[in-house]
Image (cartoon, rainbow, N blue to C red; front, side, top):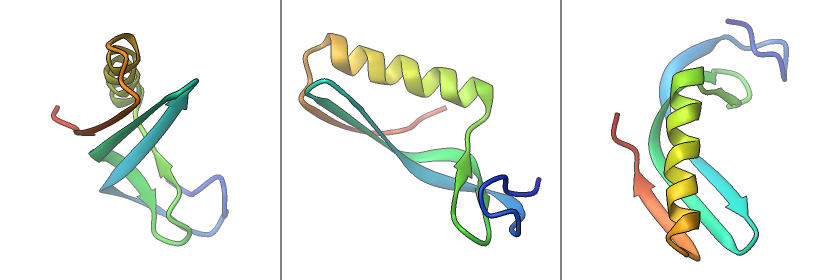
Length: 74
């Protein structure tokens, strides 16, 4: 797929670090599967992965975490 940000690169499967912040909570998920632009590095998560990432982040927020670092596991 052509990158919609830089308009020059093509995406390739890879692993990324996703950082989410809500109020006083920061959630970092490492090694998340994504399509990554070979030109600018922008990444795109599938709908399924996005849903899983948001569920993991929501659990961290509801558990009262201030900073949570998680290795993603499918």
